[in-house]
Image (cartoon, rainbow, N blue to C red; front, side, top):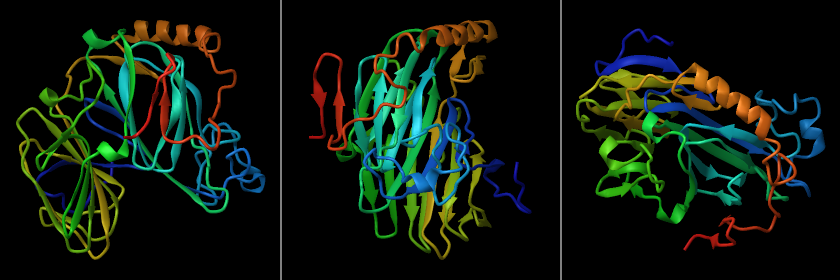
Length: 339
């Protein structure tokens, strides 16, 4: 935990963040990836000379402006499991090639997001194809895991895209707010998946806020019983309730208090995550969040036994053809694209 000499009066605690952010119930995990990949080669991968010497398969050390994560050819995350929660994957820049055990595959990016509700055992891969072979490939991906109550676990699986054209962006002369979930300034958007906790009755809200130098931004207090976290991602010299704050910190707000930000001399980026806690005792390990440790252990055993047997795509780090557009292909042959 990072402690300031003076903590803003509306802040309960302050926590360090990096590419992985902590969160409060119902948010269990947030990953925030900003990488500048070089131009892609014929395999939609970085040139060999830029990945030589890396710990391929687990490359989280930024070198030459990027990481390979678990990818060995194309950056990203080859086949892996989720069980017991929902993820929203926000591709602000760059693209994600997605394949799963439900028979879905496709490509989304440049402002799109994908909501994946994996209440039961589910495997997918998420690779970052470098489509531009002449210029750099910046990739900004944020993935947020939202837990499920116990009575909604071990049920159906749902995968749905929300295309950039449908995501509300509220702009003023001094600010731009991108609303990924919740309600703001008369606009609203929620998870498209049934049984999601990210629904209006649970006051879940996810926003990215970009402020110009000197901008003033305010949010009213939330209802009692709803938590709010402010993530200061980039910028310099902003104040919260009149107290100077620093970047790469999470500010857990006291309940029923407002947010009053005065930005400093540089453009700044903040994220807001809000929601009513589920408030249940649950157990987690690796990719599983379920009732108790016995159920988690049993589920991890099932994943180890079945994940390779049931993977329908041949290789774990499968990608789409380079000329594919923003599309979601279903097992039944239907294809969804932006309107």
